[in-house]
Length: 459
Ligand code: C2O
Ligand code: CU
Ligand code: CU
Image (tube, rainbow, N blue to C red; front, top):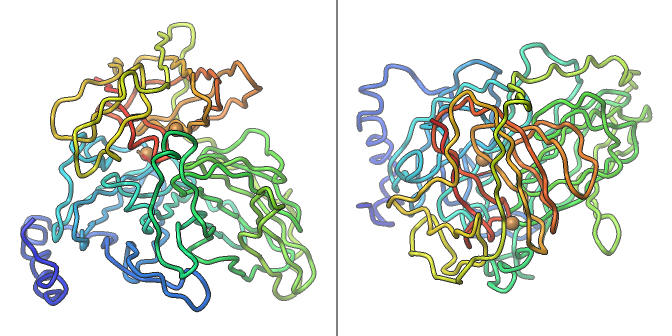
């Protein structure tokens, strides 16, 4: 880390030249499909108030929606224009471990002024997202959460594809950032934001063709909030969760999404010009409007029945007869030891643990895997939450199938992030087909940063 703030701000041309000259262009004949800067920015999150000190992706900071094609290589050059190290993780993509974007586990952090080339080939279609894995609570809190879409090989036939990047910001009444967390909350459910946004706006209004079919993608990129969303005002049903199509669609009246989770909703707009569909978030004071869709033009007179079901993704399903069961216990930290300080790891204290071990920060030193899986074998992971809080448990690089819960009926959903309710035990099944060290953590980032992290090795 050798570049001062002043040099960096005044030396844009020079640093761009450095990006080009520093081996990147010289040794790599191939141009990137996308250049993704990580940069400081500001944005009018609330009407008339510019929030300063934000972090964003891309040209303006407002994270661009990245669109990949299923099974086709996509090269992203990430340029770190922040004054601190970062990396980009592609949440839900079953890609090569070296491209997974976890500091020290899969790559070195990208230092300020440096870039890193990610080569992504997504085997599955659907709705995904991207975010850093360094100083994660603050970097995500300042804005670094973006939507990534992998398009099906065959167009499913919607008139409009509308992703909603749903998240909060923690702002004071002056529209500026306040502290990103309170320690006492980190030991409980996490610290909620104060301003709820869709695509960095409060209650944005989108035009949609009257009587048309909309693929509404809800992506919960918040660091803390577990929310129940609803789509009302038009015929709507949930057709995919966490990028995987559902065999039978679910109601769009009550869509529970935890940090990291996504829902694809097939929506038929009402016929009348100007008629509205609302996306709402349930809270104590009643539903809060997150976004509006307003019908435009003459009705297209489409019908949800015209949509062909989305094809299943090529996720291998476990052979339960031969599967070995491995236990994971999500609990309190055994001894309250303070973790080692590190740029990417910690809030300075541990409250949580997996199998009685609290992660010691994403430090360069050796940390043992929670489990070692044999490549190609089937496993059942028994996930037991012995705490009073909910934990959205996320596994990188491998998708798993929900098998059963001791508390509720579960659909046979394939996912990468399972919400484990207080005191719940869920069993999930997977085939360990993707070799490497895969991060395994709670997606309430305050929990992730106070012990509820580890990794699973596949070899
Ligand atoms: Cu969204 Cu480690 O993950
Ligand atoms: Cu992930
Ligand atoms: Cu948690």
